[in-house]
Structure formats: structure tokens, C-alpha cells
Length: 266
Image: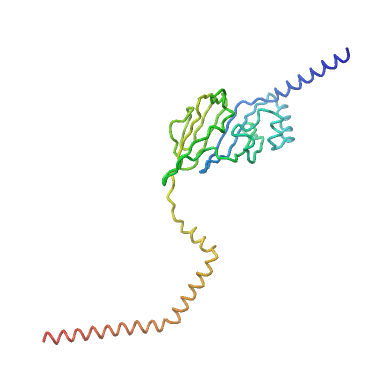
């Protein structure tokens, strides 16, 4: 009898403890931002916006945050909903978690992947064509359909000088070099193609001078210039005399030609 009471009490305690943790806070929205570089690699930020029923629960969460720190594994163990949604765990680089409090309160995961999320398809003398790889968005695949849930957004920021190619699937908001999917969205294809326009290299004079000064050959150039200047200064009298003699000789020659012409005319 006593044993049964103890078991019932333990189960009740477990139930209420679990219930209390489930009501600890709620995730009201989830945003993902992928900042893609010119090689197709992405710096990724995921934000889980939190809502706390009471100030006491917020304070309790602050204490938990201080205990857990930036460890992604520790946060996943604490709350299974907090994990990277782009790529696979074996592809993660430099993943860390932080709790941010400003106008809103959110947990942020910052990470990158060991592989590019956009694949280079074609390169010409003017452009480089890329395609976003849908395999890194497997967390949103449900029965062969890509589903972005309500309250979830995925924003892809493309490199400078990028031009987005239609169509985008599923339909997304696009402006300049940024594409954003705002859930709820679904499609049997996830497609984003773009190309980067190559820029004509310009000569930066100040940078070129700085590179020359920093080069080991700069001293050699200076020494050669000093030697040339010294030779010119030493030989300047001889050079000047040769120039004067040349002028005088040509002047005399010119005078003789004029005299001969006058004699012919007479």
C-alpha cells in the first residue's frame, strides 16, 4: 500500500515538473538569416523569440541561461526545440547560443557550415551563376514537400552585385539582393537561382604605392635611383658641354648653308 502511494506520488511529481517546464516559456516566432558570400558559403543566424508568462519565470530563465552558457549541445538537452535547422550536425562550424534581451527576448544560434549552401553552376567572363542547394533544408521536408511553418521565416542575403533569377519557389518576397520566405509556405520544390556580375578591376594608385613600399624590392629600386642621380650629377658638366657644342656646330652649319645659297642667287 505504502509502495503504491510512493509510486503515485513520484509519477505526480514527474508530471507536474514536466508540465512546469513545458510552460516555462513559449516560442512565438522563429527567424533564420543566411548571409551567403561570393563562394556560396553562408554565415547563419537563427533567432527563437520567447514569451514568458511571468517575471518570475523570466528571472528563472536568466539563471538557466547563466548555467548553460553558449553550448549548443547543452541548450538542445534543455529544450529539444532549440537546434540548427539548416544543414546537418556533422556539417556545423563554430556554433554557439546566446540569450538577447532588448525590445524583444530571443535565443540566437550563430553558426556556419563546412560546405557551401549555394552551388556554382556556370562561370563566364562576365557572370557566375549559382543555385541554392535544397539538401540543406531537409528539416522543412515533410512527405516530399517543403513546408515553412506559420511563424517561421527564412531570409537569404546574397552577395553584392547579385541578380536574382525568376522563378523563386515557393513564392518569396525579393528586394535588391535579399529573398525572404515567410511561413506558411509549401512547395514540392525549393528553388533559388542567382548570378553574380563580375566587376572590372580598377587600379588603386595609393594601394599600389603602399604595396611597392612594403615590397623587399623597394630598397633595390631606391639604390638604383640614387646611383642614376649621382651619375647624372657627376656628368652634368660633360653633358652640358656636349649639348652646347652640338648647338654651336649646327648653328655654324646652318650659317654656311645660308652663305652658299646667297652666292648661288648672285
